[in-house]
Image (cartoon, rainbow, N blue to C red):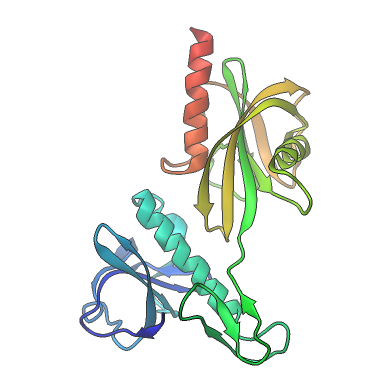
Length: 257
């Protein structure tokens, strides 16, 4: 429930606007509202981290606004709460007016939703399901450099679920479209909220079946098979992509032994 922030409110502060996050000194701010000049802003508590509240304030602080990617090295739980805040801030920003009747919306007092008093429509934050998959061929793993990752990182393949698809069908389609390969022995591993912009990533492992690598240049800059002991630059720890790679490396090492 939103309320005016008082000078004595203390905790972690997710101050977000247009997918950006306020990161004074490059870090997620912690302390009292008075110390951080947040007194009088409208905010709401969106969770708790190690006994301290986590607050969301939807506003632009002008200076110090950055990307959530800058704090990928945060503890996973706190990072996910920061991502939750960014997604909620964007949801509230894009739902100021009812899409059915055009009247002004207000925040629900009991759940994460926006309500229209005029036509009684209720809107919830939308989450885009997507798959991410590590593919193994003997002692090798398929890694690719994506067009949106210009930092030299190589990672596993991923893509959004389309209407009418199962997760298994999405894996097969995305792998074929991006790399030209077929896979088999698909196994579910884990999931991770991923606020870029508002996804839920469902992670899989698979084995190579057939085909030669033919990349989709719209999606990938490069792709190749990498032996487990000669890997390129990888995604940071704490991401589900890194977990998939590390789990696959274990299987590759066992294959080699």
